[in-house]
Image 1 (cartoon, rainbow, N blue to C red):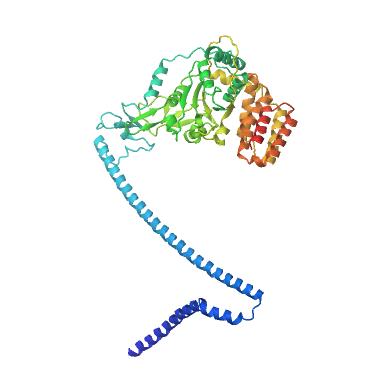
Image 2: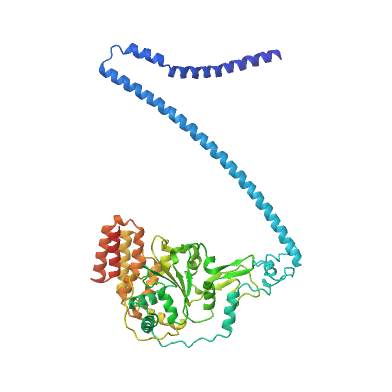
Length: 525
């Protein structure tokens, strides 16, 4: 055993001498590197016979060496600081993870307490625990029926997924059901044509409301209604953006529902309402009431979103933008509540409300520092109408309002589609223009816009407009508007070529709206 210990001591001692030599060698190396006295002696020994050039080169070499060592020292300092910051972030992350874990434990504890409270409620309602009566397969909640303000201890009865209750959560929609039980529709004018509607409305607005509109604005408005359910009236203040849909509702004797958009609007609840879990009532809005009542009548219904871009349209109107894009109108449904009560309104189908075809959404938009820019997603689905000038007063005969049925208006639109389709010659020119724009500016028209053009232009012509003017308006407001997102400062020459190309293709003094817009872009950028 003693011999082993002697060997092990000698073995370890020899190994440690190696480590000691490494440390000593490293120390000697550092000492040798920074032996300034030795460097001075070497310099004195060799500098006695230096020429001027040798002195300059020697000093330059010394400066370079000092700079290299300073750089190495700085890199070491930066590495140490980065390591310290890295360690600090790791410690902070560990603290955050620990805090998250603690919050998760609290959430689990609160969830357990909530389950215990729900179990107590089930027991009070006379339902067996775990029977699934609170959460049915279709998502209905039986407990809500017992908490609508009545006797909380009374058991909730669920039949075929419907909560049987005596409480009402849709007071306004129930009023609509009651009203239409005895409703008699008015005598609609089914003889008037589109030019007659435009002329009568213009004279009515002038004689009865002292509002003055150019015929073209009314033609554009009617053509917009034929091409899409969302119309955006944009332009400077005081040009009649709000008064146009308001007066049109008065003309049809069906008042326009006005929803004043607020900057705080962030989701659909501001527009359509929401279910209050505390009161067990649905906070209904006038917009929701108008959509619901439109399913009962044959009127032309308008909802005005006043100052629509004072909040982000994509936030509060996103669901409607998706619904209005569905090709099958039978799928136009809006989820209102996730469950079904026996006292729900008649036309509320499994918590969903059908979006009728006889309703349009009209938005007004100002483009200034207080508003948000409207995105391409919204513009592509809407028909913009520019109101940049005030109407000029004129004399008009006293014209009474009228009753216009949606069925008749829809029939007039379809007749216009058949009678005034875009000519093959102009369709070919549009296709050639599309190819030119794709090649030069990398912007395409898109099938949606072409479809809207084929609906917009025939109605515009049927109202009294010119086919090329209708095409021109669609190009300016829905195609060339996209150019604003390009680097126009680098594309001035291409814009000039586009103006020349349109003049050559469509003729001189044609497409004035588009050419004026393109020239304005050249000046702005």
